[in-house]
Image (cartoon, rainbow, N blue to C red):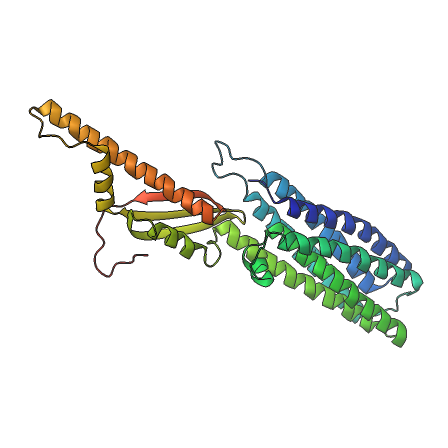
Length: 342
């Protein structure tokens, strides 16, 4: 269950960019002593570590299914995504907020110079480039789906994490630059501290969103809106199907769905097929002849239903390519009037 190549590209691009930017920001912090610059350095360091976790998750999640995990290892992406989000919250948000509040309570004027603004400018350019790659990775396969809806419902969590982290990184640079510039112009270090706090809150919001997203997928989130209805409509459109109920869906990954339903087949459909497959005969003269004919009818009935289930699965996959695992259960029980049916 391989991860999309675009997601891997976005993660590697962000990992490379943030590794370089982290070094630049820490150098600028040591030269300036700016709290906002330290916040940005911690932010980039946290992003680098988180993107390394996402990369590991994508690699491990790409392994093929085996006897131990029949549906593959796609869930590893969500486990490492959750670890990454936790890193953003505790390291990125927590440390940044602590340093910002500490700087606000015990202010000191940072040594701001051309190097400080040069590093911020270079960071904005590098992280902006990584953000463009992330946007393309997230929306590459959206087709006609509106951009925001695709990001909310179908985007790969790893690519989404990179998109949010890079967006926060670019916005964080802008906020840090505003705080540092205000402190430089007013000679008031409180602006630098406030810039650090705002960056920390931004990281906290990103982390909480990613925790919620990965938690839902780990717990077995249903397929995006409209997919279940399409699944039911495809089955009901078959002349062999009289009823569909107990439909359940799950996203194994954004590229792989598991769909399940219980189907009541139309007995007239089976009868018509049997008439074409079994020639008419007079009643068998002996018990052996009777049993042989019943065996033929049973074998033909099983084959007819098996072929129809295969045909339904093929029709579903033609309309829903992500439907990698389809479970069609045959139910012959008459549903009481008013019972749930699709």
